[in-house]
Length: 145
Image 1 (spheres, rainbow, N blue to C red):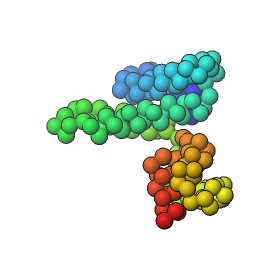
Image 2 (cartoon, rainbow, N blue to C red):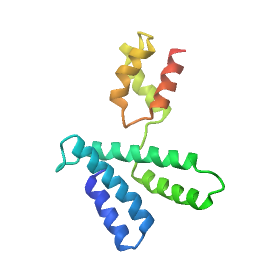
Image 3 (cartoon, rainbow, N blue to C red):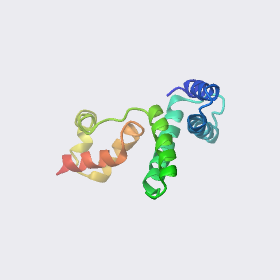
């Protein structure tokens, strides 16, 4: 996700007087800026940094939604809207089949060791931000079984 696109969408939401959408996108912009500042690249925010910020915010929104009591319909609706807006900006994640294919082609030598710890250590940095860690773990377990 391009940082400039995120900023343009936030401005568009402001002009449309869509406060909930503007707040959700604003949180993404702030999170991306924070990551860039922490990594010393304040003036040049990369797509990777924006994607990490979006994934982190998506995870937070998902947690909020899951822990919200069912009696609080108002909060539940607000959290669901925020989650949906953030999900629009989230990078497309790999499916289980795509992960399995990637493991068989790019990590065949490591897979041959049958050592799950070694496999995960090699695979996670390569697939970070492209696939869900839990799904990667499940696919590795399935291939080793």
